[in-house]
Length: 622
Ligand code: PEP
Ligand code: MG
Image 1: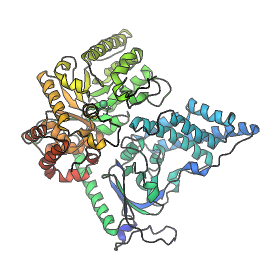
Image 2: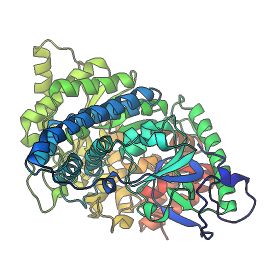
Image 3: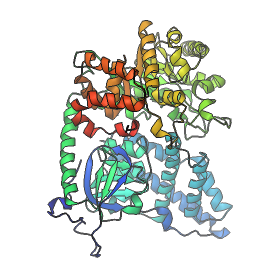
Image 4: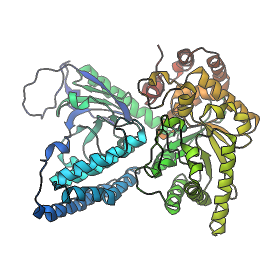
């Protein structure tokens, strides 16, 4: 989605400013390119509208005891108005399927007793004005999520959720109009962060693109922007330092860059790229209902990874043949009590219905390590990634696990449900899980509730021990799914959250490729289906290599499916296999990357120029 923007009419190389900005005389500025993360694909050009930080706009006031009732009343009033605003926004976004559940979740969070308790205590006991109390509550609850440097996407997002809800309350207390109302001409909205409510509120507004200083590809803002088809760059830390309201900017949601003060040539290029991308995306989606196939006719099943139940619809819209990985841990995060069996069942059932008969792989919760949930009392560990995580935690909490499995078993009455176990290391774990699943199924049946006759029980192969012992695990598991995100972490001994070592954590490492190859071989020899659901499956060059290594099912970010489908069509198995063989014999990740690039890239030039995720996932070799 792009705009002609004012800059498109000029014919000089001078930096552009919007025509209607205040008549401030500014020296022509040099173009500045800011790096961020691709939040939503597409390119937009236009003037920036910088949305301020609410916290800068209130005074920290102590109140008298006599003012406590009126301050509490202001708070209640603000909650009511903020809830109403969110509901209004939610009603307006009926076309954006992913938006509504997120907004509804925010409405629930506005009524969260824990939030109210903290804010009310600050007003009543600490005698702080309502704005101050809300701001402090936001910090306090956010701090409960642990170290602020924590980079895990879930924790970062849950912290953002708390901040968003409190920001809504602050706005309501300050009588601020919704952001969308302040947009009176087409603009690129720039902010430290944007709540999904803000994003959704702009759906009918003249918003050309978003830029935020924080956020990730899996942040709610990115998901919403993708659902609304508005280009977005998130996690651009320098955005607020360099962009002022009125500055002309180019938002490139494909490369994750923002150009401030672009030259005329840059603007023209951005428009051309935008037009080409739109035509390209439309063309790719035209064949969304065709099956994934290589040029030689070999079928490759392409499924989607989802975190939010609402993403199931996004998956179908992008041609997914099913859900290859549903990360159910999302249900356990950011809440003070565990989800009940009924609550989980309703969500799993909704996902099964949303994909209309396609298979759904529900992964049991992968909590612990870098994925934190306050509802579990996790011990403080020196190396949490090597500690009480995923299936290890589930087996130590048999009641919680039983509830989880029963909900999944009940969902199997509505479509093809498969259950997958994360972080399996020993055969014994699989045997224990099978016993737990049998007990959960017996329990559901004893209550007279329907369920499938057989539920496939599979495992993630993401710990090197499981990859090495795949031939024996093949006798215990009904299917495998290789999790390269963790396999890279554990096999290369690189913390997956480490930014400083991210360059070394390449899924193209020959060590990883050899592990994958031994898993596909063991699976084939034992007639066990094997898929791969790590992030590398979303990148065209890596996906082709994986098929050459023997994979016939890939599960990935939904929006990557059309381009992976198109990439596969351009190659035959006879072309992919020799490249994989050479990669297996290579000495380094860089060598593999060169090999793969030379073999595949010349026939993917169009796709690679629009690929959103490749550069984010695979370090670029020298
Ligand atoms: C993986 O480890 O590759 C995977 C898909 O699981 P997660 O990223 O949820 O750990
Ligand atoms: Mg994993």
